[in-house]
Amino acid sequence: MPEFSHIEGDAVRMVDVTGKAEVHRKAVATGRIHLLPETLAAIREGTVVKGNVLATARVAATMAVKDTSRVIPMCHPIPIGGVEVGFTEGDGFLEATVEVKSTGRTGVEMEALTGVTVALLTVWDMVKSAEKDPDGQYPVTRIEGIRVVEKRKGGARPAEGPG
Image 1 (cartoon, rainbow, N blue to C red):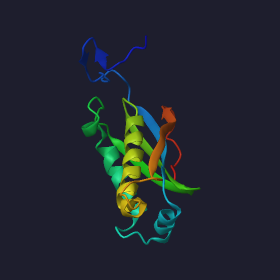
Image 2: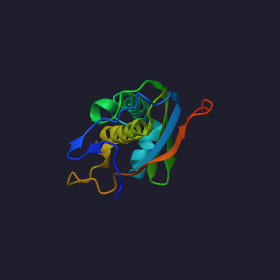
Image 3: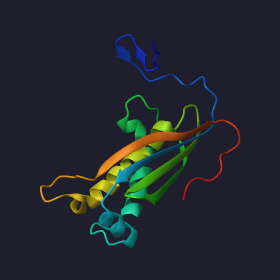
Image 4: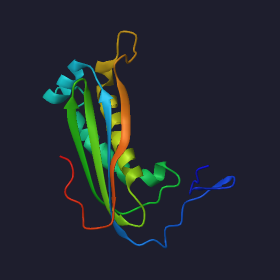
């Protein structure tokens, strides 16, 4: 049976990291939102009614990274050294990548995952009127594949992140 560091019997707890050394840490997470071709074109051309979708999603992702410990109960508040948010358009989707760097006693993968999730939710919110069908449903729109693609601990400072 797996052992979970946040659980002791029937109680949950924040893991004590005070004895750990401070080291450079980095995590990169990605995820995709599938959108209609017309919506992707509107984002690319800057014609979305609510404004600049990608700029807004970058700000939202950065704010989410900084607030991760407020929304995930057992996450430690950690000093964020840097956040990079990038977007790549694919065939029928937009992929978000969030890289988080810190020097501290615990990893930053939850921060990267939270950032990419909020970036994608922000995109959805900004384009939802264009994505709805006549019945108010979202037949194409979906978020998927949110995952950590890289995690580093220790060593020299990692190279610069995604664009």
